[in-house]
Image (tube, rainbow, N blue to C red; front, top):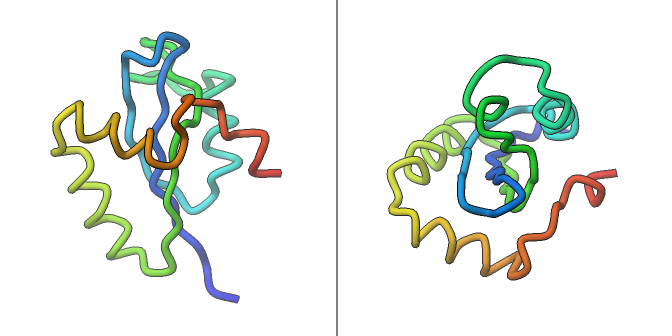
Length: 96
């Protein structure tokens, strides 16, 4: 089985701050965000709710897509999230 790579979008409880990241271990990375293991944007703004993710087999495609999403307008990001998760539910538990 090939390695998988993930792009993910986190938000805060009010769904008004977004963080886009990438990883090869989504469960571990979201756990780190939720437990504020590292200093940075997500810890500062309490961004820990997983509302969207995509899976890739190719790390180059994943990096390209991450850059694309980071350049998107806020409304485009919201529409993307709503297309898969209209209620902005936390998807973290569904990873197990």
